[in-house]
Amino acid sequence: MSRKEGSNILQSNGSESSFHQLLSDTFPSYFTSKPLDGKEALSVPHGTTVLALRFLEGVIVAGDRRATEGYSIAERSIQKVHEVDATSVIAIAGAAGPCMEMVRLLRVELEHYEKLEGVKLSMEGKAGKLAGMIKGNLPMAMQGLVVMPLFAGYDAKRQSCRIYKYDVAGGQYEETDYYAIGSGGKDARGSMKKIFKKDLPREEAICTAIEALYDAAEADVATGGPDLIRGIFPTVKVITKDGVTSLSDDELRVKLNQLISKQGG
Image 1: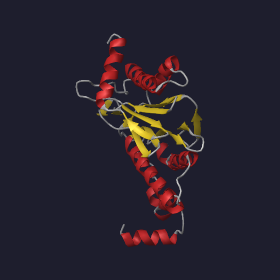
Image 2: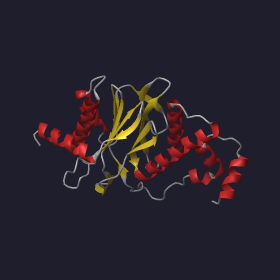
Image 3: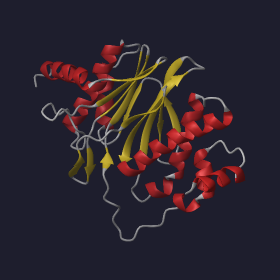
Image 4: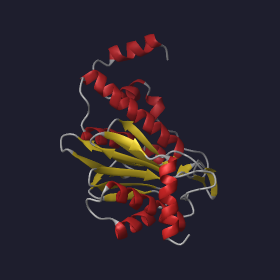
């Protein structure tokens, strides 16, 4: 699409502050899926386990790095935890392609809103935008291309961090303490249930998240554990009122070595 065509689209749609709605109105075929031929669902890479948990100053969002395709490992170092803007993070599980596309679309959606309205969207507004995108993906989800994200960020209005989970139809629910999704989500939640405490300090919260992913990898074949030889570690991001920071591989290596030693590995 040329710059002139893009300008004409914006003019014809007035002050539409939703880029996702603008795109679907202008190019409806882009969001219209056709039934798949055959009885089997598409075999595509799927991201597996991601989690989020609150601590004293904010939220930890983490995910393993493995993507699977059936019973095979499709990717050993996929990134499932992404910054959306300066104060929010999305973690994805499900069909890798649609998941990554939704991350990019959400980023543009928030930038588009801010440029047209002149203000940043609230945390609740961001979560609602994502819910609408997931609902729009329902026809594809019915064909096996499911997108299941966790969304977390700092709410300036409440002056605290919040965690949202979603169902396949776009239903939006807030979690007050922690949650995990994906093939190893149940195992990660079980691990956090045993060791989670309210108002954990930052370092303890990070260790709790890492241990939950480690436990999930021990129980779930699709969840990737740390690979100390290849240097592949979980992705861990920390959200506070000051923004989003990421743990380095060196920090993660130290914490994982401590965890493995503690568990007798």
